[in-house]
Length: 209
Image 1 (tube, rainbow, N blue to C red):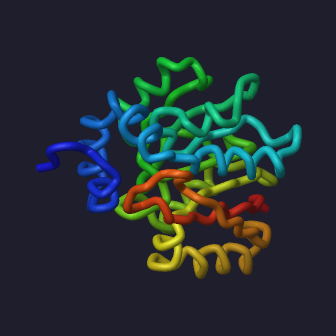
Image 2 (image 1 turned 120 degrees about the vertical axis):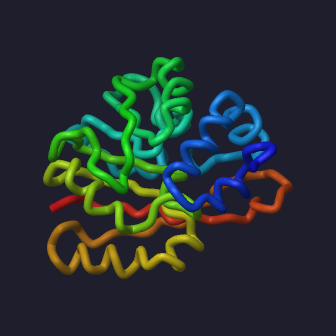
Image 3 (image 1 turned 90 degrees about the vertical axis):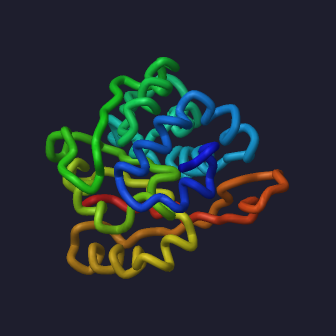
């Protein structure tokens, strides 16, 4: 049993039910005792890459694994953005901020309650990481992206290497399903003294063909 939810507990998760249990207990304090205390800048980095690459046609937007809404907050107001998460409690927190057009509960490792080709852009920070989601979810991500959609998917650096994301993206590009990806290195945390301060991620940027 976890006395206090934290990043180490999140990395140790083994199932969707474990994820739901952790974030059920963490939702109310996630912003204050994780985002703020840990100096969590990862969502800002994904939003920055998206802003550099986006075009007027890249809408509506889906924030995959939206949590409490840090990516949408970084993207800023005036955009059509929906939030997707496995945790209903985290969606309540995100929804209360008024930053999402809609909040959708769903599991990337199953069939999402979203139509084929529904989104023109898909963003993610913190979902493709230890204890969460591997490259097996990429097929479902692509299903809900329309042809030409821009995807900016943040993937924990160590998780990327350990779980074969490079090979998965290479196969997708070779098959013509996606454009050749760009890999942009970014920090997950900034200016904080803790055990995870040096963690890096890759923002993988590509378009669905």
